[in-house]
Length: 181
Image 1 (cartoon, helix red, strand yellow):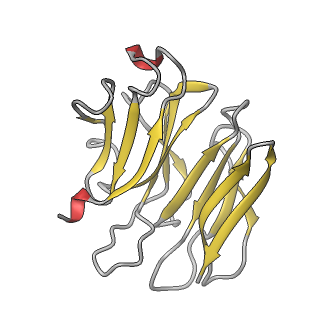
Image 2: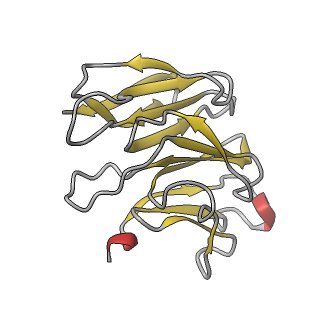
């Protein structure tokens, strides 16, 4: 079913995070099914995004230095006729219990979110933008203040968005990004 497409999985990397052992707490973003959390390694899941934003959970990321900080980028980045769009990025500081909208409202489709391994206030978002029109927020965006403000650090043009961004494991200030038109 359309809501069954898994867009992203993010694992809370700290042992004991949210009452679970290492690898037992993770989040799943579904194409049109929101965001789900498990604290028992996938034996059961609880919806954590139903009352927050759009039902499309595109990208999910957990801060490596603080497993209570979870980011969700709405809008799946698949180029399909049945694609679901979103309204930007959301952040939780309490393990998914509550959420705050953090901007990038016109990104529509978020491909990936990366959180700096040592500083949870530094975050990069790969934003695809509208799939069938020009404009919107496209490219790679960076915040250094936990999402209060964003700077577009990789912009190609009004038709080209960023689908992915990866941090170099030896230097998290070096990024690799994939764009597409």
